[in-house]
Amino acid sequence: MSRPSPSEGDEIGSVRKIEAEQVKVAKELLEEGHATDSAIPNEFRFLHEQAQLQDIRLRESNAKQDLELRETYAKWLLAILAIELVVVNVIFCLYAAKGRDWRLPDGVIQIWLGATVVQVVGIVTVVTRYLFPRRDLPA
Amino acid sequence: MVSAIKTEAAQEAERLLDAAWPLRLTPVDPIAIARTAGLRVVDAPLPEETLGALIKMPGEEPTIMINEGISEHRRRFTCAHELGHWVRRRADEEEYSSVDLRSPLSSDGDDPEEVFANEFAASLLMPEEEFRNAHTLGHNDILLGIKFNVSREAAQFRLKNLGLTSP
Image (cartoon, rainbow over all chains, first blue to last red; front, top):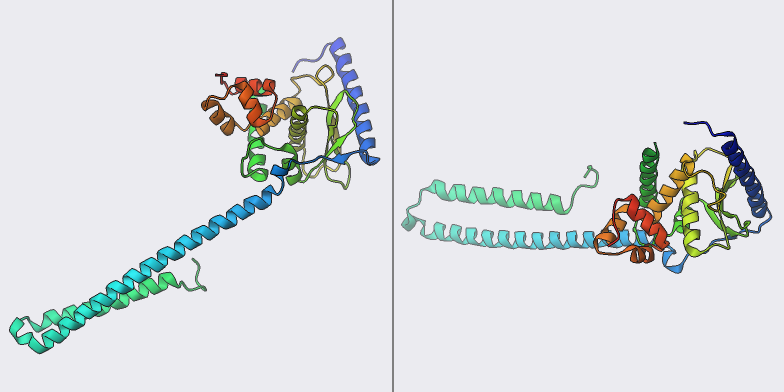
């Protein structure tokens, strides 16, 4: 950095002197209560509150959408499960009554019924856990 | 050196905008930002040659003083400029003071503190992304000045500093 010439040095010194005087004046005005708080235009008031409100509304909207999705999902899954159970039970009854004519090996219906039970239990468990997560476990 | 100071000033302005002006509305209000940041902003009958001052007295909040006789544009720029001086101060400093004088009297334009404060003020009042977007939409210096509530000259300087040309 170059050193200021004598004339530049005088100039800087005089500016510093003026600045020091102005600081003194400013401090006096402040101490004597001659300063009034600057006004903020109306549109800029409560901006933080507005931002918080916007954030709350966004969270609320997300939560609502999430709830609606869960509701739709649960309804459809339960409906499909109900239909499947009805069909399986009807087939089971038919098989029991007229199984001889079908000539299906016993293992087929056993596996089918067993798989259905596992499927129903599994889906209900998964759906229930998702819809009602345990609060004592981390998300 | 000057370029590094300007880059730092622009980054600091962005940081303050993110913290205190999250909705990124334009025009930016430096007074609201200063208050959010914990400063007091006052209008005062300062001497004619003084645009503004930053005063911190022991045990009190830092105060930005604005000359009550200056125009709206100058007032906004002065407030943003003083905010620029404030961000350079350490949070634990108990007492400091500075004043900004009108051009013929003001400190050298190469003074790092002034370079920082000027760049900070421009970046705060005319955030780069929003300014570039408005420029891309075809706003010229006059419209940019209106949109960001700054003087036409300030918009021209910003255009030049960002390497843009007025359409």
